[in-house]
Length: 296
Image (cartoon, rainbow, N blue to C red; front, side, top):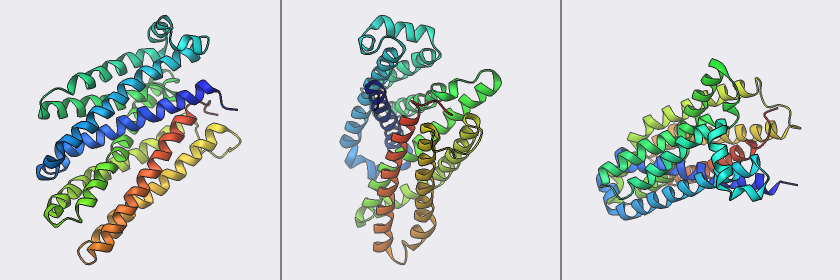
């Protein structure tokens, strides 16, 4: 039977990871990937998404701290005890990292009323740092010394790269849908070309740092499926391999067919990107779940 507090913590992690990743993707497209003519008619929608995602990040940051306090204290009675929160923040490695995390969440909230250009810059920079800071909590934070520091930095880079990959899928899907409209096709095509190089880098960094993270945490492939941690980690690897296969198929099979068979290629790209989104959501759930188990 799943411990209710552990289940609640998994749910909060899912919301937090998903919101932070989506914000990175949405703001990246609005700031420098999608051409102005593609973004301008949707600025109200984009701004609403920014506000919603920032709110979810801020609330889940506090909820994550509260649940960690409950887990470290006497259970649910400490979830709403500010004194226990302060103890966690001042006396644990998680708390040391989470002070910065809460500060970055506050910066995201404070950025919402800013003028567009400044707002996008602050949101992009702060959300990137917030995702990076997640590398300093969890299993990567257990090791000490230079190896521990290397593990934290590797995990932080992994979360940031994965955040851009997964978070960009929703705005990427919007660009693919825009290809069906003749008036927007040129702008959508430019956005896809701009994303292509960045997407390659993000996927490569995600894969390489993910493999390094696995070796630094487990020291081997997750082959012992009697271990909850290894079983969930293996499931995550399987989903990532599927995502990688779809991403490669989209880029090197379907994209070249856009000129000769535009309708079929666009349909295939949209279906493939939706599949990546679903698999990416599954990865977020699995990562949030196996973080509650010992890495053995």
